[in-house]
Image (cartoon, rainbow, N blue to C red; front, side, top):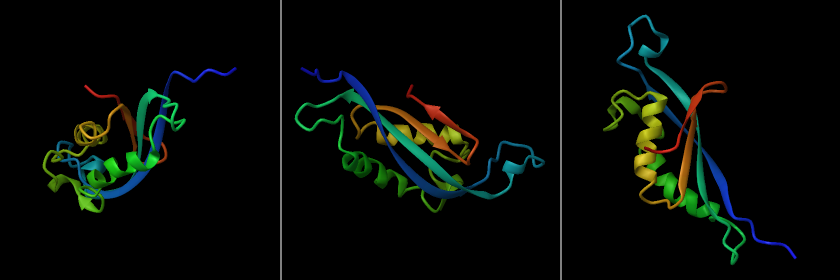
Length: 125
């Protein structure tokens, strides 16, 4: 006899491309200049495995909640997006969290990678 697992975390990955500059840095810093990034986003949802479906959440539901938010920043100049005037990866993570959490029950973590070696993880306030 098997028992249903308890709480589990699942995630869905996305990507978006945006231009930005970090205006609070000195002119000598490479990120003070206009540049683009292909960001990788991982949205994690934590909850019980629902016995009826055998999953925590349908990945299509995660996509339906996240993609409209990404449309606001994909292929945009982030500095012109309200709330992202200083679009550090950390600030982007908080901005995304604030817009996704209200529509995605169980949101537990957002990870943003700005390239192959750097990024951040945000777990909410």
